Length: 104
Image 1: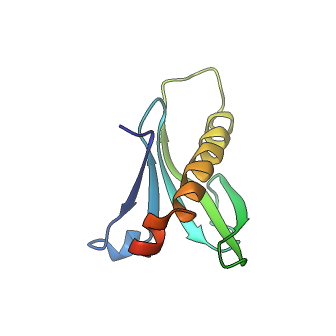
Image 2: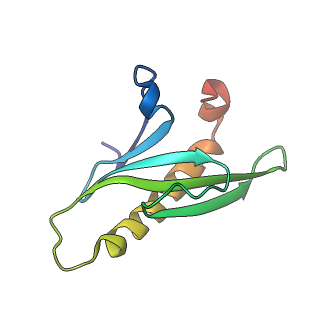
């Protein structure tokens, strides 16, 4: 199984959107928002990349839920590396032909 899964739940309008689920080690649910936004109190990071059409795409990834057994590191010390790995994984998907075929 991959470390990350991409999820969409059209049955829940209040929780609509695109989500990345981190499955190995610390479990995390990460909300993917298109654009450069401040999502509220949760830990988040902004990312951008130049797509195949030579346009800059901006995304904000934010921790919705993090479950861990690590009591030594703080919440943010655990969340930030997960966000960075999730972004690298998600960016690879956005750059792939699968994304163009499925167009979330």
